Length: 97
Image (cartoon, rainbow, N blue to C red; front, side, top):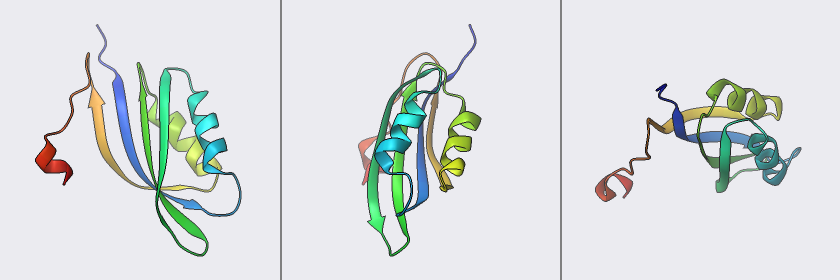
């Protein structure tokens, strides 16, 4: 059985003006293999906002996600979590503090 990506957590710099995070989530959820998208605004500046993008699915294609984010003017700062395999493993609580 092919092991696939189940969750990706991205730290993204995203423009304040332009496509809303609602529309960004709608675009990402249309990618085949993605079941859920959560976008949280962490910080807002004059022109940009720092957002946390959590994506879960059964076979996430990172390149497709990256292309949509970049097309809408976003820049991926970091990949903060990746889960692959048959089940999602949660990190220990002490790492989340």
